[in-house]
Each structure stands twice: as structure tokens, then as C-alpha cells.
Amino acid sequence: MGGPIGVYGYNENPWLKEEKAFIKQAIEAGKTILRIYLGTQLLADILGARFYKKSHMEMGWFPIKASGNKNKLEFLKGLAGRDHCFSLARRNF
Image (cartoon, rainbow, N blue to C red; front, side, top):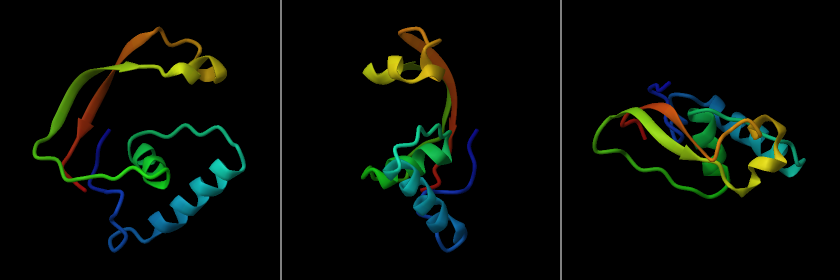
């Protein structure tokens, strides 16, 4: 996972604006949303997070922890309290 598209790359990827509008409509409709990598960044941006250029490339296995909402979402019930995921993040914001 990882790629050259950044969450603010509207000039190179004008479809990002439509994608963000679609995600926002899904949130407002109370839909469950599963997003990965760029999708996660788009979702976080819609919810008010900001992104900054990284000073280095991030690659490897990192620990993740489910939030208190994991029992509310059927697809997360199989997660243990803590798991690991592989991350490959470039400096593309």
C-alpha cells in the first residue's frame, strides 16, 4: 500500500473532490465506512484532520489498537485488543 496520490492533490487528481463529497454523503447517511490508505486520509480530511509532508519514508509492521467502537462493528469483532499492520507511506502530501 502506498502511492503517489496525496489527499490535497486536486490538480493532478480532480476526482478527489467528487470522492470526498461521496464519502461525506455516506457519513451524513450514517453508513459504515471502511477505507484503506488514501481512503483513510480522505475520510480523516473530511472529519477535520490535516496532513503534512513527511520527512522520511515509513515502511514496516506497526502495532494498531482497536478503539472502543470495535464491538459495534461486526467486521472488527475478530480483532484482538492489539494487532499489527504493514505500512508503506511515502512523502506525498
